[in-house]
Image 1 (cartoon, one colour):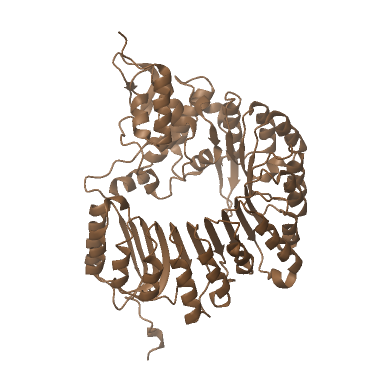
Image 2 (cartoon, rainbow, N blue to C red):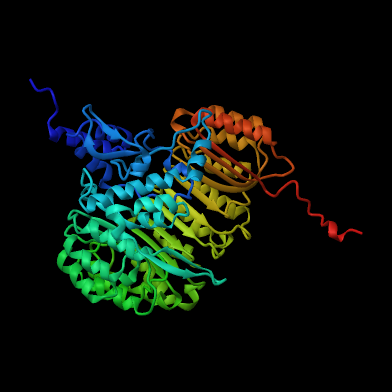
Length: 602
């Protein structure tokens, strides 16, 4: 009797492992036997997470596949025994495991020394390049498995980050563009300011060519992201029958009306567009033309990050998708503020991010537009998340929304980086926060310069009633909080997971309250603190197993009452041993630097 599992059962198992993000088990299945490998590999590659630039913090790779010995697999044939043939790394061209499934092995002491050495040596970039080479080789038919066809998301930003990395050069670059992949190599001559001439990679044609090879042989891609030329996109679209999501670095890829027509014709499932920037003139007209040309009620999400020129035509066109649009992230310049009044047809929005890249008080300069904007937001009864950035009148806009009986918000963010939001002038807004008991995230960035006792109490009382909060960030507004205010804020928040809070003369009594918050994982005190070593060790001791990876950051320790370096090390080691946590401890100012300038003395 055959005791092996049917392929459909194995597929379900692999699919469930992907949903659980159990990459280690999936990889182990992939190297078990030839029958299981395609099922496991298809899940590993399906939606490979985007990788940051390898110069980024190595913690991104800590939870990944715990085996390095498979880093140099060459999947061209199978051994007589189950598994893959391991060959010398200099001969390796590709393997079956994405870099994002690798993890750097820890040093025996458990610190990050091994990770740092791996970054410095360039081995991480080498493995990163092997992941992309496996996909490229498969796209030209020179790999054992069709890795490129497993992809559902093609993130060309990740490829560009690899090519830009300072360690992607010399032998690594030569190996990457060797053999069949030499056809993708492009370079250009650059002259420095000092007149020195040198040759560097020409990234855009490399990315375009590799993208073309992958797209032309993969008809199941659902998402594409990266810096893509208009010509390349026009060539790719006929192959993208299942395209849903398009994330463009430069909106000029959509400048050609022929691209519009191709998407209308070949991409019936298209629903999400994100644009990082749109250089040049006429972007509003071109984007508005593209959106208005889509079938009515098709677009679900639109994001414009910076300098995309969104204005009247784009906002008018969005009303054609008013019933389907669920997420809007738009950036407006001063001249485009009147366009905010044209969004009133988009009433099913669930997530809304609006940013004004200008310092302007709409109550003075655009009073009618402000009224239309407030009325529109109050008609969006499905709204769950709202973020306003650099809106001087942000509290005025949000207060009626918070008081609405028909809207149940889960996230409110008000980011006034240029100190446009003065907490002392908006007590009504702070009181209104208490009406949204469904809030899970509250992020307020302003200043507390004019806040008096009643203003502080209003904010503290409201926050303490938001018992469903999971993330609380009070940037600047809590500068006048002391122990009682912080305790009143945090004590009722039993679901809180992340806290960023300010204050002055904050001592160990606050840590007693923090110790009762058993879901807390990240705590940042941007406050003048005077914690003791015993107080911090007591907090560490009370952390539970459900708080693995707890991160404690103390940014402004009172320099006159700081704990010493040995105590900081002891707390860090205790935190690491207890829950695998980390500690950042910084003084308000460097205690070794005096305010006295010796040059002023005689």
